[in-house]
Image (cartoon, rainbow, N blue to C red):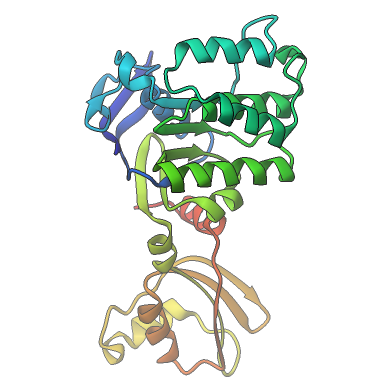
Length: 304
């Protein structure tokens, strides 16, 4: 298990992390999302053992990460800003990794080279950004890590390569029980592969849930009522006793399109459906909701 507990980190007069908590189950794919400056990269650098925490604990399998070489040998890390040795090509870097990691898998490396089609003899600093990202994936996955940390991993990758890379990651999770933490702005990709999601804001974890559970707690509906638009909140306040439950809907987002209202509401499907149907709408439709929409509406309204 990957775990951060009550993590605080200061940089001069700026507090980047403020009592952050994070929990990633073994053998799962976890998406860490947040706006720029929210603390995602700082959290990942603690898990990679680059930063030492000011307060709190950072552990993998109940072992502290910082200054733990044996543990970090089991962790693969692809940062947003890549670094390669000057003048090295992929073949030379392969030999370096093979000497550094006892778990290095030459056969897996060769399979990934064939899959992605990179030239081992070409200097890495002459690769495009997308090709450098591919090289980083090849090297990290060939170490057969138990934990893989990815910070904005798909920048510069074309859709075909992204599909190939993520398919390989999913296979490693399924076959070896590898644990993956991904920070990315591409929430559609996260929606497709993540088991759980953490939403970080201003250095704090504000929501951490299994993705299916998170989606079940936020509903997207369209409604229309006889006689035109109805202010749902005013109506619920007036008829709260008749509804025999909390009279309010926690509406995160509202759009009006003629007589039809599009609403994003925090609450279970049963609760939201019962409250709206009690008002006898002409139209009531449940619509699919994406992780990107949840993230946008939660951040726009503010998470309490």
